[in-house]
Length: 200
Image (cartoon, rainbow, N blue to C red; front, side, top):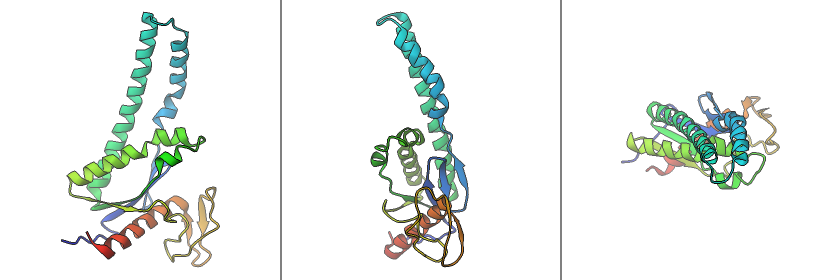
């Protein structure tokens, strides 16, 4: 049986750093940044750990405190992603995503900590698991699709758009675009065009 999806049953999702996820309906979901919020506490614990005598009870206690903080961060992040992925799967028949080269992105030292904190890979894994469980579909587009640079209204290709440009006006149709929302709309559009042309 061939399934066809449309804009009413599919949501496009663009992930980011400032906002964790941007949806094709215009909604932006803030990034909780659990690691960043705990960095000060982590630095304090690391200093305490480095001062303790090797093999002492105090050293072991300091190690346990560090491990507990890492577990808290992991659990907070996991809970946030679980609730969001469950919501998206419940609300939509299909979810369109851009294929991300996370390993390549982590080589950018300025962004590596923020990317690791967002943990996009685990979020996608949760989406895939829940979609399969609830009979929903994950649609994908390639990582090199120009989702940010194409006007989602008229299709104009803005080759001059840089990473610093957070919004832009299409010179052809005059539409004002929020860069991330435009990308999410195009992710949905590209995925639907691809899926409905070949079926599943």
